[in-house]
Amino acid sequence: MNRSFSNLNFKVETEELKYFLEKYEGWGEYPQRGMPGSPHEEMTDIWVRFRDPEPCVKSGDWSPFMNEHESIWLKEFVSVKKICSQIMYLTEGSRLGGVLITKLSPN
Image (cartoon, rainbow, N blue to C red; front, side, top):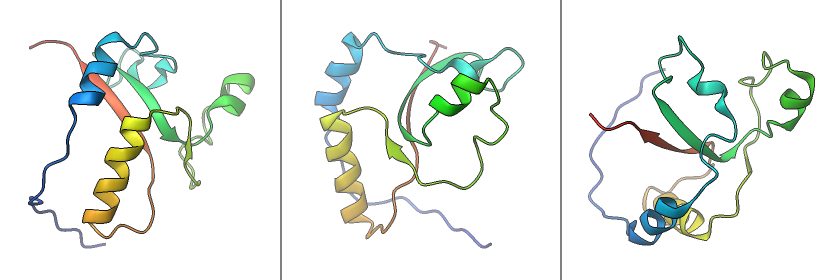
């Protein structure tokens, strides 16, 4: 598969989302990506749109989690949906996959 990346010439307003996230207490609800030894262990995130993780949480088996799936909205964050809609429109996107918001430690 040949993929090319380029800078997109548009801006998306994120101030409303930034303000919301500064007060949000649900970071790390699903800590699986940040487990020790993982390349993501120094971060925490919010799974806004992805595969429904609840069957894996209940069974304890995460092996099928990354298989092909249709992503669903796990959180009803209006500001995130607005940003995703803008990006989909501006890029003429036809299918939206996963949306994670990741917080990294300073430095």
